[in-house]
Image 1 (tube, rainbow, N blue to C red):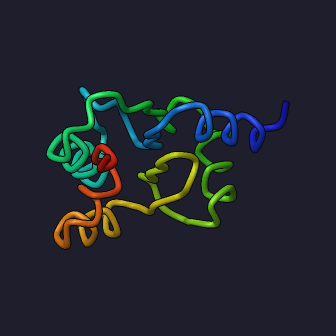
Image 2 (tube, rainbow, N blue to C red):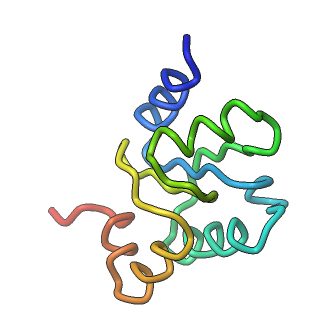
Image 3 (tube, rainbow, N blue to C red):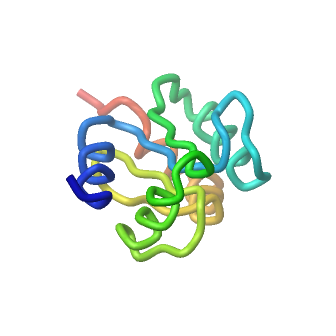
Length: 105
């Protein structure tokens, strides 16, 4: 299985996936910390996180997977959302809360 296959499996098998430096409990950079905080403020309790500092192949592979050069990277329902800057813009406008919220019935 290639690293791209591994990443594809991770982002499609979990609703919310965050590739970050460190863990949600111990973020290793300010951008990853901000991403985790925004997810918490949106009520996300079940986030699948991948610490890119533990795997150089994932760290490089995720940049290629989304053609996005920075980490953290957020995926929701298999779709790439963006990094912490895009998350912040979406959070400020209410889009992130809508994306992560429960669907209206």
